[in-house]
Image (cartoon, one colour):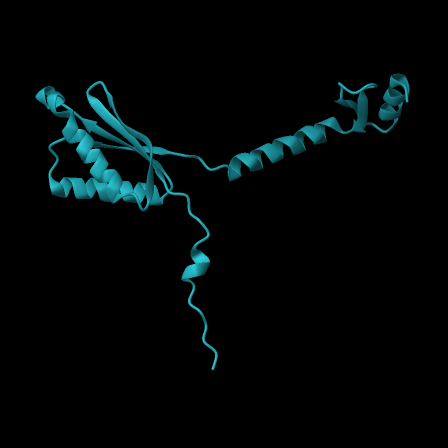
Length: 156
């Protein structure tokens, strides 16, 4: 059908003539209600954004000379963040002469990653960034191991 015929047909039906495949030879057009089409596309995009999971990054700061109780408390907070699905940026903050002993911060971060290896993977290994040593932990992806834990029913 020629373009002129298609336009008159669309006007008779009170619809729009929309080009759907301009790269085709000849170009493909469709008679449709363009406003309704745009609305449906917006609704689909909005639904896709709703279902999309936002990854949040929480941060926990340590000092190299942290007490064991404070360390345990902060470790528990990190566990909570990881189980909620957030990534955690762990920072060891060095002050003054503590910069001479960055191995203390590296040891602290390696101990933390070993203690959390069941629920977290190290996404970014410890790296010195100015006066901070930074490591990023991500939650472990869950596998289909639920079926193994289900109790088996016994029949008499």
